[in-house]
Picture 1 (cartoon, rainbow, N blue to C red):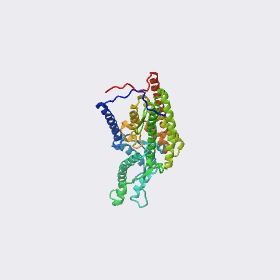
Picture 2 (tube, one colour):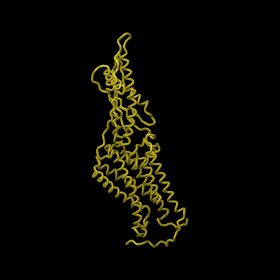
Picture 3 (tube, rainbow, N blue to C red):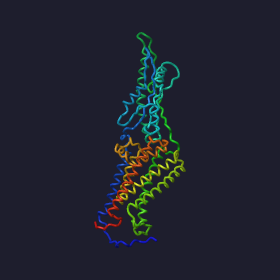
Picture 4 (cartoon, one colour):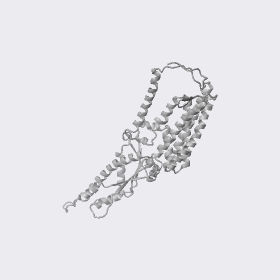
Length: 443
């Protein structure tokens, strides 16, 4: 039966000095300020922060031979559009990649680009037919340029692609229209002394001014139940939170069971006698609990997702990845707590939540946040977890799509947690630094 620990000397009343009273307020204020900077800076102005945003440009146009009253001339309007886009697009904001159609599709399938502009093979031919059709009766169709979005990379990324397409392709449409109008007018110039050329109708002038048909299409649309591409982010957040919060709960309850911390049940306080156990063995006990918890929770999350209708094509892979991520995060969190004690709560919160969520890329693409978020994303756990989860849920578990990075970085995090925990606790044990109250000092 648990009993109240009376082995320590009777506590003496202590006065709450101004310094002790102000310290928690200062800590919370600083933490809240860091939260404000991180969470507001990445969402306030994504368009201003846009940099290196990858979009593919595929030019399949083979050109055409056009005659303007003299010998036929080979033209390739697709090349002109490509050159115009490369010059018009700000290189510091958009990473416009001129690729073949196969490479572009591979990069779309592996989340390497957020969208693709496709100029078809008959682009010049149809544009030439449009020019001729403006003065010769017959059925004509406007040439098409397709803007493919990649909804599996997230709703915000899709919105950026659509806005870019609306601005850049509208400008291209106007430039091509001006060139086509000038070309048609040149064919209508009568020879000296000849009959006057027929005037172009207003409808024809409008058609020539905006000759392109800009079609927006989705590449591999998301299935229903995907939350517009947000289920990967929230599932990743759950894995991270369970790993961190679960580790803290396990740390607290096991320390309480071993008598290192009191347990409060409403007005009752139970403080068991301290167990004779080393710091290293205590940590190993907590790690064992974390592993069991990881397997149980990963299975529970998988079941809940399936029951709610979330599409999961690779359930076994998602279960194993989830359990591994929770274990890696839990080991690291408990190691930090073992190393620095109560302050580890703040450290874990900053590393995994305060810095992790804004740099995850799960809501706003990394390329649309301030550049220091990209630096954080190189090592922050949330970004690595998100890449792996998104790959499993949306990209069939492809390694290039982020699963390889998620696994290797989680393995690295697990290794860091194990080495840190064992090194610190063994050092404390060898130095004889037992877990017992230190002598109280007045402040």
